[in-house]
Amino acid sequence: MRKACLLASAALVGIGLLLPVTGRAETLEDVLASAYSTNPTLEARRARLRATDEGVPQALANWRPTVSVTGQVGRGSYYSNQATDREQLRTPRTGSLSMTQPLYRGGRTMAQTQQAEASVLGERALLQATEQTILLSAATAYLNVVRDESVLKLNINNEQVLRRQLEAAQERFRVGEITRTDVSQAEARLSRATADRVAAEGVLQNSRANFINVVGRPPEAPEAPKAAAVVPSSFDELKTVTLAKNPNVIAADWTAEAAKDGIDLVRGELLPTVSLVGTLSRNLHTTSLDSESESAEAMVQVSVPLYEGGGTYARLRAQKHTYGQRKIEADQARRDSLETATRGWEDLQAARARTRSYESQIKASEMALAGVEEEAKVGSRTVLDVLDAEQELFDARVNLVRAQRDEMVAAFQVKSALGQMTADGLALSVEVYDSTTHYQDVRDQWIGGGIQPAPGYGE
Image (cartoon, rainbow, N blue to C red):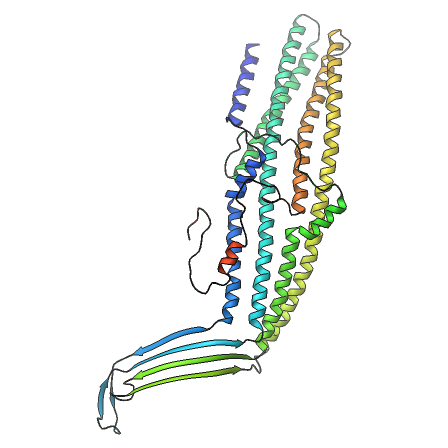
């Protein structure tokens, strides 16, 4: 008896090291807010969007003039049989200021601008998709920890119950009420419960490691949400919203649009270009010691490509194929989003049905166990019957915990398919990242190389 108590105490101490100790339980909303604010993958995607934003001012720069200054200075000895001074030692100096203003580039500036803007919109959608992936992973990790902690507690309780059952069986065996077989059956069930408890400890540790990877810190006494997330009541509504709002679909459409603009961008290389070129120059001591000259001129330059070896036409054809590829990929994105929505919906319905069934099973198993225990007291039931009834009740409770977790995860998967698994869609208490602020800041910026780096990362 004393040995059994020591073993139970050791098990409780061991599990106490596994489960967090904190003064305040954290909620799912706390975890999602933390992941949204600190996840490196999400921060990296935001930085990628900011880099993509810069494609628009790069395209707009082709509307603007380019200005350059050049100068030369030297020292030389010059001889001429035509000059009065046949040999001269001079320091020639030249300087020029030139400006080139594009007037027409075959439509390439407009096409490049439209392509850059489409790329920005597509990258914003991909940022939303990444945000959804991170928040879904954080929610899943949180619910996995909640589930595995609950399952571990059920295993600990089951082990303790079976230990008491074994002690009672040993006592009854000593007084001759039951046989050695009954004691062996109780010992076997206890050994199985111990193995299940050890396995549950390992599963919980794995879930906690995944939580740390996604959220960036260990879980602090997480509590199970009271209910699953709210989703549409009909599958038809789910499909309609998914096709209209799923960020992967939106990103694929904008990627196809950018490829379409790329056709006009390449085609523009086959058209004439027109530029206005202005030059102001000054030369000192270039022909004689006293020579000085200045010039100012403005010219319109027209360049008409006649034949470029066929390379531009090859790139034009390739870009058309790329556009076709992107349209096909957009169609596939719609199929994928509908599959994800369907899978989430069916998983949700199945989990809800399983939850109701397990709740009914637990009620029935509790009544059955109570009856079997009473019958065992009068000798009409064996120890094995009691052990079987206890096992059925334990399995039903574990299955209920898992079904409740599956229901909540499936609801979040549905929200992800709808494009609602975001900080805005979940109404998280965080400062929501505005994906348009940086774009508006740099779109019309003419000069300057400073940036605002991601929080915690240098420039």
